[in-house]
Length: 151
Image (cartoon, rainbow, N blue to C red):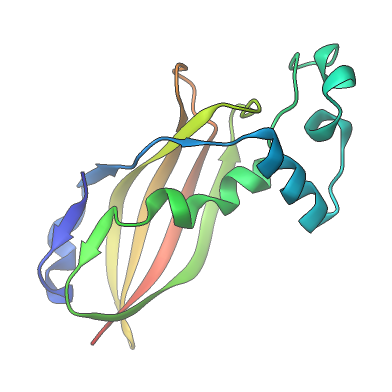
C-alpha cells in the first residue's frame, strides 16, 4: 500500500500517513557482494563456519547494507504526481536495533512525519522502520529526508 498525493502542493496532508513495502530477501550472495564493494570483509558477514559459533549463530548482513537498501525498500511507497524529481536530502538519525541474518526477509514501513517548503520544492521527512519477517524488533529505524521538486 502506498501513499498517493495527487499534487506536490498537497504533500502536507500526507503527514501522519504510513505505507508498507514488499518483503525482500537479503541472501548471502548480496552480503558478500556488499563486503567486496565496501571492503568490509568482517567474518561475521562472510565466514559461515566461524559465524556459527559467534554471537549471532550465523552470518549477518552489514548494517550499512540494510541501510543502503532503503531506496529499493521504499520505492513506490510515496507516490506524488507532478514531480520533476525526488532526491535524497539526507538522514537525521539512524539506529541499528537488530542484525539481519543471512537469508532473512525485510521490508520498509514508512511514516511521513513532516513536510517543509524548500526553494526547489518540498523537504519530506519520513521515519522508516526496516522490519524483519518473523520478529517484533526491527533491523533499523531511520529518519530520512527527501527533496521533492515539482515539474
